[in-house]
Image 1 (tube, rainbow, N blue to C red):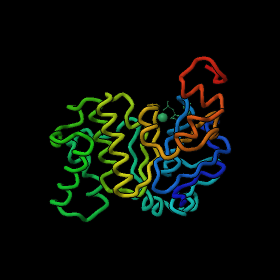
Image 2: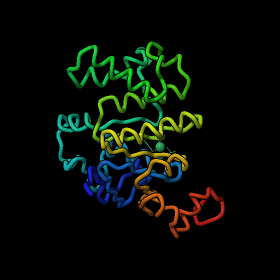
Image 3: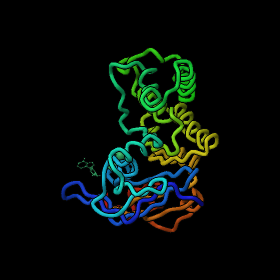
Image 4: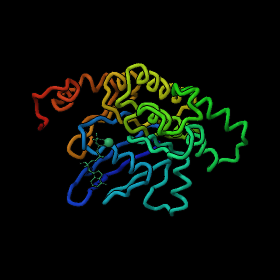
Length: 250
Ligand SMILES: Nc1ncnc2c1ncn2[C@@H]1O[C@H](COP(=O)(O)OP(=O)(O)OP(=O)(O)O)[C@@H](O)[C@H]1O
Ligand SMILES: [Mg+2]
C-alpha cells in the first residue's frame, strides 16, 4: 500500500503545552483516514502539520515523498496546491459570492476559462447540496451552508489529498449524510486521499478505510473500522461508547 503522507516521530507544542509527542502516522494513498480523539487532543494540529501551516518542534512530515521541513517557501506553496483544506471554522471571503469563493482556487492556480470554471463550480456546489446559492454572500448563509461552501472550495481543484476538519459538525443528519457521501464519491472517482477529523461515529463508520485514535499526544489505536470497533483498548472502547466511566480522565 502506498503512503501519500507521513508524520514521523512528531512532537509539537504551543508554548508550554505539549500537544503531540513522538507521534507517527501514515496516511495511505487513495484511502479515507479518520482521526478521532477528545477535544483538544491535537486533531486539527495534525492537519495543520500535514498542510505545512505549522512546523513541528521535532520530527518530520512527508507529503508525496517530500519532507516539508526541507522545502523552500515556494516549493511548499506548490505542494499545497495539491492539497485541499476544509477548515473547522469555514474561512470564506465575506465580500465574495459563494460562486467566487469556490472559484477562487481555480482562478488563482489554473488557467481554466470562464465556461470551464462555471461548469466545475456548479458541479461542486451541487455535490454539497448548494445548487442555487451561487450569488449569495457568506453573511446570507446559514452556518451549515457556509461550511458546505468551504467544503466545495476544498475539493474544487480535485486535489490529491483533502484534509477535512470536522466537515459535518453542527449539520443536520441529511446534510451530514450528503457530505459523507461526497467524501466517499471523491475517493471512488478520483482515487483521492482524504484525512477526516470527525466526532460523528456514524459517518466515520460509513466512510473510513482507516481510523486513527489520538490520546495524550500519540496514536493509541489504528486500524480498519472493524478492527477499531473490536479493539480491546479500554480507552478506545470508552470513547466509542461515549461513557463517563473508564480510563479517560474527565
Ligand atoms: N495557536 C494556538 N496557540 C495556543 N494553543 C493552541 C493553539 N492551537 C491549538 N492550541 C491548543 O492545543 C491543543 C490542541 O489543539 P487542536 O486544535 O489541535 O485540538 P483538536 O483535537 O482539534 O480539538 P477540537 O476537537 O476541540 O477541535 C488544545 O488544547 C488547544 O487549546
Ligand atoms: Mg479541532
